[in-house]
Length: 258
Image 1 (cartoon, rainbow, N blue to C red):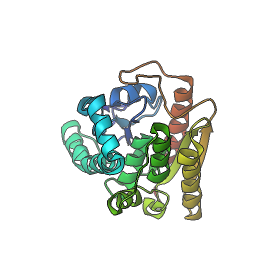
Image 2: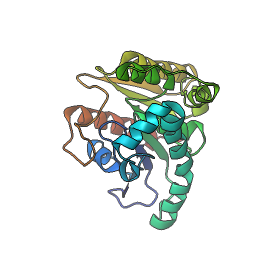
Image 3: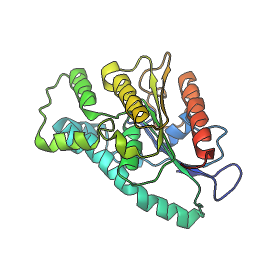
């Protein structure tokens, strides 16, 4: 899903924004929750694998995730979405005449893991990244899901390798010059989301790069009401997140690169 800039400039900045697996869980619903209001940029909302038009159905997805939540679930979605990005950008530049303006990435939850993974994996050169309710470390998220669903997960060498690849705190130096803003709901899980986001901010600052953390009161993990499949009216929390995202991106996309 691609929205053109309000100015019509081919060389306007490009923002790539991946949705959550929670609400809003499709590209259309995410665009409604996070329209990046007032930002003059190309806005690309890719769909995640196993979601939206590629959703295999609730029963099939849950069976796949329960069988192996790391390699068959989060790891697969993250790896495939990152790998798809360069081809997708080449196709859109050819078909829509996108110029060479600066690029930023945005994502919510699993989509934030993809946004960060695209930067550290060199799938895109991004001026800025905004990570919302972000999955920046997989291990505490798997621990949280195991508690919620009453299961025991046994880490293997293969799943540990996936968690290492998706550990954006450990790989923070690989963000290079990309500025990072994390946005977390005050009611979200502390161990799985707030603490890792704070650690990523601290690591980026120690590396001499702009990074900050915003906490939104009265917001949990999701950015929209359930079911979060179709576009819906923006919630108060999503409106705050949208404003915080636009503020940060406008500053970073307008500055001269270091």
